[in-house]
Figure 1 (cartoon, rainbow, N blue to C red):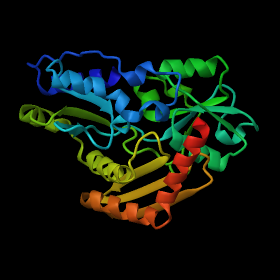
Figure 2: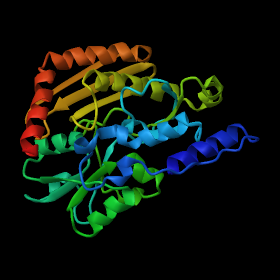
Figure 3: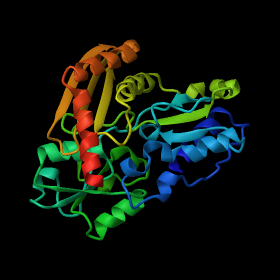
Length: 299
């Protein structure tokens, strides 16, 4: 809702005569809180109802956290704008400890992300990782109720909702590489709405768009979803892009990592180069191992 209100405010600032209404909706991703997203359908659970509303003419556009948007949109839909990125880092939140390194053996860490699970497990195998679902208030309440020693959240969400004081530490991207699109918001429309493409164009932030397109190129190549531990993060400085990516097994014991730099305008090509570099490190076998682990857990 904060994201929708933020976009409404930006549009009204650009077009004072335009009335922007918010159609509040609760998606399946919001409703299913007792199971990990990887077990119940993945990222698409957060966008399907919104796409139906646009298809039926009840809504003109939808505002998403980009990391929740599937790599392949349904036919007839497209992303019209990617807004300037907020802080892309992961955040360590705890009422007792100041960092992951301070947590004692057996301490329970909550996260909804297989990517975070893999990264934490690789560095701190003595910690217990447990699923954490729900909106931000729900997750923080579970921490405050003592269900977890610490939880890992996206820094962007805490900052946007005015809760930066809950952050005990930011996780350096070197140690906790962000997910593709993390910290960015995107606006989805029906592809045939040329009028909206023109209206929304001023909201598109070029550098963020270039960065997340490169990241999503990597994620798409590996069938990117919340069902695999995959990270991809691009940074742009003076027209040059530095792209890093990783795939891993959920336990963090196997991983492939790559880093490349090039011109920002060639982000998609850089993404494909990263994909090749990861495949040269047996990324496909690592992801197949993810499926094996998931099947073993299910049985």
